[in-house]
Amino acid sequence: MAKGFFPRAWVKKSFYFQARISFVRVKYLFLTWLTVLVGSWVLYVQYSAYTELCRGHECKNAICDKYRRGIIDGSACSSLCEEETLYLGRCLSTLPNNQVYTGGWGDHSGIIRCKLGEVVHYELGEEPEPRREPPVFDKPNRGTSVEKFKEMLFNHLKSKLGENANLPSLVGQILSIADGNRDGRVSLPEARSTWALLQMDEVLLSLLLQDRGHTPRFLGYCGDLYMTERIPNTPLYGFSLPWPFVSWVPRGLQRTMDQWFTPSWPRKAKISMGMLELVEDIFHGTYGSFLICDLAALHFSYTDRHELRLTNTQVVVPEEEFRRTIRVLKCETDADCVYGVDCQTSCDRSEKRCREEPVQPNLAKACSVLKDYILRGVPSEMREELERQLYACMALRGNAGQMNMEHSLILNNLKALLWKRISHTKDS
Image (cartoon, rainbow, N blue to C red; front, side, top):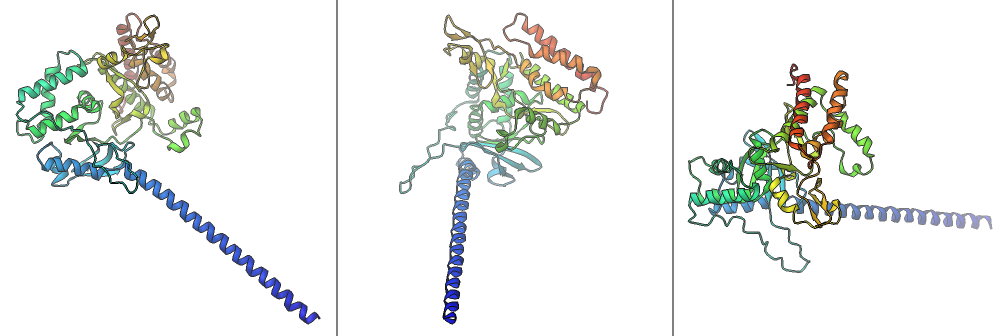
């Protein structure tokens, strides 16, 4: 009886053990399969997002096709399409129809931007429609004279900037840039490229501000693809949290972390001087007045010599265009009278229309950005005076009487205070 019992128990136990091993194997096999499936799906989604956002090859092919057909021309065309000495590097695009890449052109390192048509989505099994791109290179028409092209440029600039005595000289400057091959004349393909570029406000504003060194230098163009110099230190604050962590880290802690990687105080003072000079130059400047409608630190950078650069000119708007847009807005409260991120006017409740005068000028917003930046690490003997002037600056209002005089006084006092401190140092 005992002899028969033990083998049966052993067989039963062995069967249970083998069944358990089989279950574990199936479990791990299922988990492995699930991991591979989820991983493949994540990779597919990431790849799809990348291929939709990063379409540099399409951009180059479209531009070079038009160049070879004689539709467009420009200073960068032969380098991009024939010699291949201008190349696209890392993709920085955040929108499918606005391509942004790092790039190189000979000894120059820069940022390359290019416009593309919208991505066409279609269901599986459907025949994809050909991409419909807007006819951006249809002006000027064949047979247009240089004088007629000058008139086109003048009228376009006038519509953007308003009446200005310096517009003829600006037209001459643009024609000089349009002569990409430096042969002393502007060909029809070069004129078409230039006209397409000027339809983008950020290009026009870059050209307006680069003479004073406020924006990255314009290096070259081909069609509506263009390249500007690359500014190494971005953003203005030395540290930028990766986007997944931004919502998890408290705002106060973020501001403290931002300051950990900023330059020494004399260098911060020089960078701050650059922002004050930018504000000064666009306040009743050579080509009129401009408003910065998103004066955030992330739109600014600085060079290795600690010279400030505005890296996103899309946040700048001519005052003429601002007034033209804001005056037609209907409103119930002041909150309805906002242009961009922070260009606000007040609401005339009796007329239910937005007033044209900005509530807060550029200088007040610049001082708000600079306050935490410049007060940290400031020499103790000048802290009280600098803080007093910054708060007086932040209190400026655009609709106050004698605003121009007060604006100039505060701006000059701030610049003089900073310059007095750093003028004798190597950072000046």
